[in-house]
Amino acid sequence: MGGLQAAWSIMSMVTLTPFFAFLFSIVFMASIGKSFGVRRLYVNLLVKIFEFGRQNIESVRKQQFANITQSDPEDEDAPSGDNPSPDAADTGDGTGCAKTNGTLPNGGSHRYMNGRDTSSHIANGGNTVISRAESLILSPEMIDDTRSKSAEPQEEGAGGGTRDQGEEGDEETKSDGSEGGGEHEAAGFKLSNCLDYVKSGMEAIIEDQVTSRFLAEELKNWNLLTRTNRQYEFISWRLTVIWMIGFLIRYFILMPMRVLICFIGVVYCVIGFAFVGMIPTYRLRRAMNDIVFKHTFRMITRSISGVVRFHHPEYKPKNCGFCVANHTTPIDIAILSTDCTYSLIGQRHGGFLGVLQRALARASPHIWFERAEAKDRILVAKRLKEHVTDPKNPPILIFPEGTCINNTSVMQFKKGSFEVGGVIYPVAIKYDPRFGDAFWNSSRYSMMQYLFLMMTSWAIVCDVWYLPPMERQEGESAIDFANRVKRVIADQGGLVDLVWDGQLKRSKPKKEWKEKQQEKFSKLLKGE
Picture 1 (cartoon, rainbow, N blue to C red):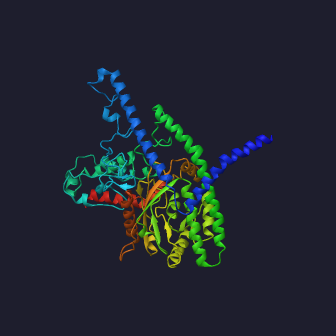
Picture 2: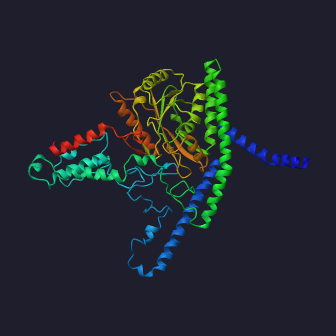
């Protein structure tokens, strides 16, 4: 018995001691913002593995196609839909999506590659089914009457609106029942005017611009994760072996270490901010809060193998201003807080996020509110004004979209934070989806489920751009200012700039939007 205990103690010393030494070295390096460079080597290795997987999938697809053509030689001269051409079978990226020279079927292209902007413009949001003319999209804020004033019947119109628009146009077309002429032609009405709305409605039924922003971003290549829509783990024995090894590494090596690091970070957060909150001197409390704040979020970021590249640090947000960023995930806060101390504003949560919110509030001024209470909104606006008037307060981190978007677009910014005044520091965040989907679909996953997915992903890799500070111009409305800031963020991050409200994720379109389209169509009928 004594011999077994001695053997166990020796085994523990040999295995556990190096493990905990390695673990705490990671925590220590994370807390001071340094790295041994292992994560970047790890990410570069993953890129090579993904490329090997892509080539392997291509070779298997070519072999499958060759077997089909050899077994059916009589069909070689008359190919059918059941035997696609080599170009259709071999996509060049192993995803099964038809593509020519890296171009998407709708004429768009992959703009963001390796954290860099590889084209000057994204057409219609990148991976979409329908190609819409950008200048002819019907949207809540862009009502164009030029069509009704034109005398050219062959001029084309386009959609991009809602289902209601298509239904309205269809009804009007049926009720007319003529080719245009007589009294209608004298009034300036053309039957072709209805086609804009018919096309718009059909496009919205097939694929609208809103709901697709709340789904996981489509990957160009398979990343060896079964949670994606590319299921290639059993297409060849090589990929099966790689996938199984990756599964064991992610679930039995990386995940336990990540959970421990995250646990250490949360414990450090609770204890550290409780201690900071008891410091009576403001200057010392502020200095200690900066240290604990950055240490906490560096540990949490390291717990998901976060690799963050910051650009243009000279534009980093300063005190008593607003840091405004696009929103993909709650992890956005941790990513940005590794480099700068912020005061946070947001909805009050329970569970894991609630623990962090209560801990943070002990040491520095943060603003938590209940989204459903209208009275709280008035109080929030008042507290924002008070915060930005004090030069000692850290900048407030705000996500004006109010909800998480899937890393492809920027949706409508709420005007509240742009009415208060003060300097706006725009920040663009772009995640690399090859290593893990950072988007949080809150209607599908709870916070703990989402954290589990993050802990079992390969890594979270992103770029952060600090942009030049912006101020509201004289005579500029809060809505115009918000749209101007949103446009700058979208352009820098390679994101699609959309006018739609992100709250359509949870609610129906506003009645005013439908009325605007109805008013426009009535003008077409009247020939105004």
